[in-house]
Length: 303
Figure: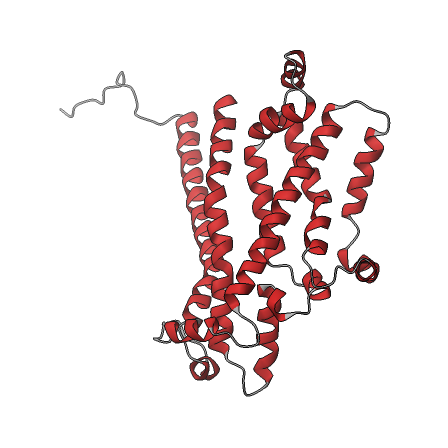
């Protein structure tokens, strides 16, 4: 006789919740793989221009004019030597000029913007909201709008071919102030300031020794932005500087680019100038990025 099927044995059928969990896990895995693929694609696209810059800095002028290439050549040191030659202007001097302006600008921008944000956040005075709105309103005014008046002003004060018109105005940085104020509101408890006052600390000491160390991540971020913005700034230095020994790197690159229309133009030299000009920016980012990482880690631990 044929054996009867055991009706009492439990049926191995997945319930609805198990099916939904497996479906959700599969969807999550697909979404994660798609996000990784997208991030890898974006990273490659961002780094591709730097790769081409490095490749082009190893090619001669004739090779660059012949067309596109993904393989390096053997003219890197030749282009480097041509870039370092002292002709109408001197690249090491231009790097030093840009470094002086960018370093001073970034320090002044970050320090005084943080001080302004600290004052408006900590002190309760009449017109505080009006001052905040006014600073944000200034942020909407393009630099080009005030260029004519700016040039007339520096001519009256005889500041042409000096670095002061490029450094002093950096104290007023509405965008940096806005970022610092938002960060201070979330990272600086007023109780800390009150405790420092009770202990007899004056306002400058409270800001410099207590508040600034708490703002290191925000300071590092804004210092990177300020340094890169000042380093790449071409518009304002072109209005102020006309002497070759005072020119910054962007002005030198612009002049070399304009020489490409003549027989004296050298694409290899131009790409080498651009390659050398981004090295200080990368160094500054590598030096300051550790403070950003520490700040993010500290914030996650506190949370």
